[in-house]
Length: 336
Image (tube, rainbow, N blue to C red; front, side):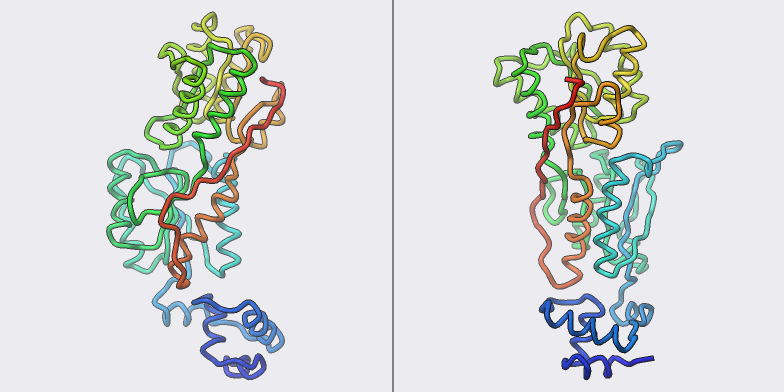
């Protein structure tokens, strides 16, 4: 097996530079990185990952912590699958492993112990909420100054970076589109208030109404849990207030699809009787009948940037200190 010294001699650099390149540590010029990579490939040099991890005091893994919800197939949802794809690609490119971990959203979770036992070098948190148990657990990471990033949940806490999307602007654009089309009695099917993106979407909806001299009517506000089933169940309440509605904005596509299915079972035509807009631009949104007008959210990019943010402090770079909100885009189809 080739040695690090042989790689250094062939690349014309020091052994220390070879070590930094192979371990992904510190800033390295792209030209130098390519020379070292080419020399390593030519000589068949392979980094001893286990020895490298012990030398650096690291595991080589980034933990991705997900909520455990019984009987819910998280990996089949567009939201989680796209974010995880972005995370996975970023970690693979950086030479890190991905360790999936589950937490009970109703109980405190000891994130800090993951670092102390060297199970992970950094942590990415998906599906977090503002419930007291979750908030205190996540805040402990900021208290310890540990490398981490929360995905799509804003806490506004110093030392706790978040990468999400501008959901306020996304919901605003959707509601504005309905208002410009002449709709004035627009219902809103939102997710749980424990999520910051639910509050952001509602604020965008409220802002659009306010600009048209309108205010949210409590009778036209509905709540689900971002599942198709909850949208289908909400169709009962929506149908009861149908005479008061001339449009419906939903906080994600799954609830929108469920609501449309439930309304159709009651003889309500979408969009002729009730135009509907979803949110996410999931794969299913273009396959529904009618195809769903929706808001596109860059979930893959969200996951990729979140992983890069968490890794930044491990490679000598400065991670983002403020929340990063990616732009959204309204996609016009036939449901509205």
